[in-house]
Image (tube, helix red, strand yellow):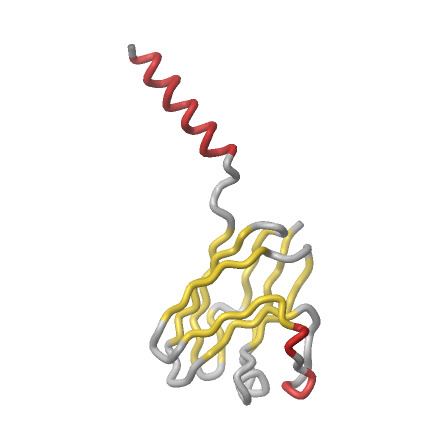
Length: 126
């Protein structure tokens, strides 16, 4: 009898493993004008869940860009791979698929925030 129970538990474990797990989970806290942490690492092609907590007095965004910018004047919406925002004092959660391996710039695109230093980096491992 005990052997059957262990075999059933092992079969369930294999079935769960075959589903591929739950992807990557990352967190960011936004304040004026910074992210904490300033870097994150995820796996290419995996579903990534971001929890963005805004401890600042202003709205903030976490925007993943396809190419780096040096100033807000360089920013265009077509650079955005994925973005989400959180109101002051609130948390938000969203999910995206990690792009190809590489290092990507993360910025807050609320006017004045990136130029005040609000940026980070997402490393995507292959």
